Length: 138
Length: 112
Image (cartoon, rainbow over all chains, first blue to last red; front, side, top):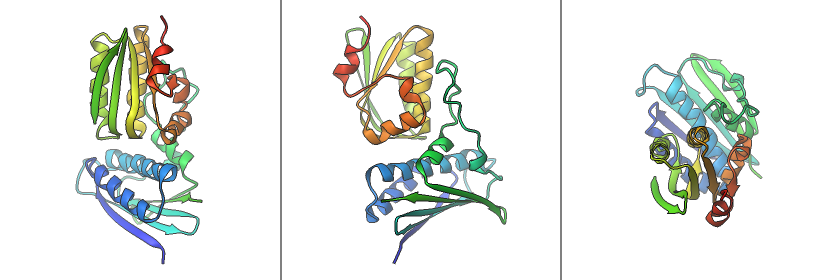
């Protein structure tokens, strides 16, 4: 049977600590460690932080649902929220060629997600942002 | 998040321990900006005790670099775990900050 976990997160930054601890425990159960575990922690940290900071007018009282399922060869993740429509796949790429003295500070989070995850698909359905994420684990 | 500040000649060494995430990066920002406004010009940040960094942590490093650069200062980094070095490469930050294996190499690379 596939190993699964569903986590309900309130849209407050303090919830990131609880999410990180729950992820760590789940990934250990699935024997996902080291670089792969860091990539998953990082990608979800960046995505959920964006939802908490930008999807709603105020923090608190808006649930974010995170579902993880370990399948042969990888981890399938679904991230859902009821915030304003936002497709992270359409976010502009940061300018990595800009001079470091004048380079804008920020904009790296989604870039990390794109670079560390193997598949991303976004849909907007029934007032929800639904992001499917796949991380291959070998 | 814990910090230890020491001096090695003209270089201010900031050793960091803990997770650098959206909840703790402000602590690092306050610490680093305090050192820079207090006159630190040559700064070495030791990541030996850091086991996690995200984009908000990297944001603080770029901010520190930009402030130091204005006053002719330098920022070196050392002892970053391999899996975290990768995000420095993904973000192109490995070309902004010189990154060294340990404090000795990082200190030796400051001019003078």
